[in-house]
Amino acid sequence: MIVAGRADRLEATWRAITQDQVYAMRAPTFLAGLLPGWLTLRALSNTTSLLDPRPLRELITASVELERIRISSMGLVVMATDLTRRSPRVFDNRTVTVDALVAAAAVPGLFPAVEVDGAMLVDGGLTGRAPVLEALEAAPVERALVVLSYSADEHGTPPTTLRRSMEEAFETAMLHQINRDVELARLKYPATDVQVLTPSAPLKLHPLEFDTDAISRALALGRADALTCLHALED
Image (spheres, one colour):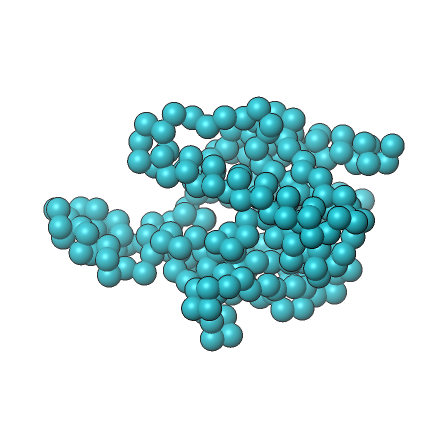
């Protein structure tokens, strides 16, 4: 009952999230769009990011219980990328902080790099979309499940705008990099059964969209698929 209650609270949190809590436009960026021609480019060249990181930081601070993570028996691996050393940076239950979590979500250009222990860190996806290798190195297991947010028969939409072109390019690169990381994990850890789980139907969600109805459908589908997966693993 305790686990179910926590899951319900987490689901309620996801249902209530709005785009402004994650992708809030910085005032200088918004004002730069009102300038003519080359002045827009000059203004944008001097800004640190397109989006304001403060709402995302506030959301993470309010939602993540670090003390529970510290004492949890379930291992945590959070990936970030050190821009100076051009290498991955791994955080676990003991070392993860709000700064580390904000850095792990800091897509370069959209969010500014975050200073953690003197290093400038950004999204870990630059060095590994699915940190399967890092997770298996930290805690070898007999079976590893990699969860994708794309169904097997899901296809992109025609990129008729700049935004859609960027989103489709991002999602395509992410999907192929995750599959590559999975194959590398299977080669490096042959004793581990590495399986990829995909939704039973397309989620029809995009990175910059926070549609309440779409999130509700995704949560319901995820719950049903998770139960199906658990039953299959028990058989």
